[in-house]
Amino acid sequence: MPIVEITKEEYDKIKQKELEQSGMDVYDAVDDPQDADEIISNMDIADIEDVESADIDAIQPDSISVTESGEKYTDTSITNKPGNQSSGKVVTCSEINSSNFATNFKLSAHFTIHDLSTRIGHVIRDTKTVNGVTYNKFDIACNLKALCENVLEKIYNQYSTYGMDITSAYRNRGGSSQHEIGQAADMRFLKIPQKDYINVANWIQSNVSYDQLLFEFREPNSVWIHVSWNPKGNRGVSAPYPKYATFLNDITYKRLQIVNVPGFTYRA
Image 1 (cartoon, rainbow, N blue to C red):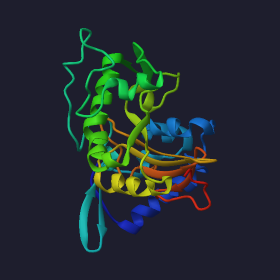
Image 2 (image 1 turned 90 degrees about the vertical axis):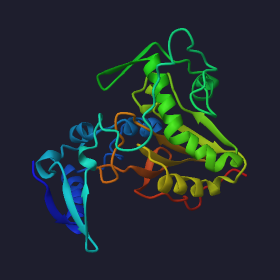
Image 3 (image 1 turned 135 degrees about the horizontal axis):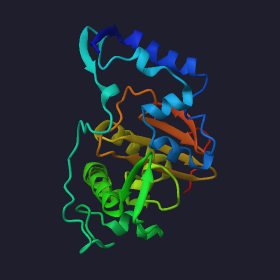
């Protein structure tokens, strides 16, 4: 398929038209609000087609050359599917094997398997199948290592004095999210006010390569940051779903925006 040159405005209109034709916002379409971020975090273009009935391939070539402010660049996010790790560190996991797989295994300089799994009671299961792909416990641990090396260590190095705390990473509770295969983590910061988490979330959005970033609020006073990393290829900024968003009570509050929720009761 050839490269098509369009303006930024035309490109934005195409994206908006996809949503209008679908008749629903994929974020508002989820049935279980308690696990909305889990359902969404593992979606790819095929899932969006199923949910929205959007004829995505019919209007999207392999690459689009977008003109903005007199400059041209090629948006390759549409083809940034599993198999193309466009940025970040490719980790090797040969050292994770049956003879040394343990909760104290160091995934990176500051994180162990224990920090990202069993400390919250979720022992890594032997196998997990998500979207037709089966991961064994070593695959899951390797995903956790990639998440640590590419995302969590960068955040820790920037905000270690803020009391960074991983509240949930790997989960073993029967879902199909990135948490279930070791690709996502939720975090809080114990030494700063909750309302200041926005500064951390904005820094991540601007300085860290990731698959998805969610700034999450749940009433009455829970605030956390969800971030994921997909070793097989992170979703692009211009994908037909937000790479980053603000959630309130597990429902989208702002698409493509990281904001504090007015009137929210922050914990002291």
